[in-house]
Length: 170
Ligand code: ADP
Image (tube, rainbow, N blue to C red; front, top):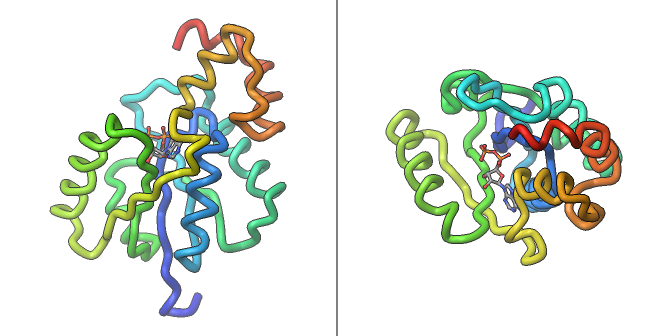
């Protein structure tokens, strides 16, 4: 890999990946040479979809979007900045929706900066259509029988349909 490549890590639970996440990936891919979508294996969260399921949905979706080799999927455990250093990323990409995201994201970004000065956090705003979209809201809409077409890619919709019952517990 050439030394000058600018690599960014886009970390998250992706439980499941939504069109909002995809919007951020597309924007980030125009700013960086490579984006690594890094699925969190954080044991403190109990996701609805298992780690292999979440990863599979992302891989399947990205393949269909034909973003090529510039976007790849991986996972991380433990400190995000340690992972960034391992993969030589210069930035962490996060999506900012409403003001409600700000406090938490601000805290995380400043803590990560304290831990690793060389890793910058970059916030991107999604298209207005996705500002109120979250994985948990998608699961809630699915549980109540709403149409998910506008919120998740078709393959993900199918996976959600097959897991619907479980949403009542998360
Ligand atoms: P986490 O548990 O780390 O917040 P998520 O999968 O919920 O993981 O989100 C990963 C990142 O994507 C976060 O920065 C989040 O703010 C962002 N994100 C999630 N949904 C959207 C959306 N609809 N528009 C823009 N950014 C989003």
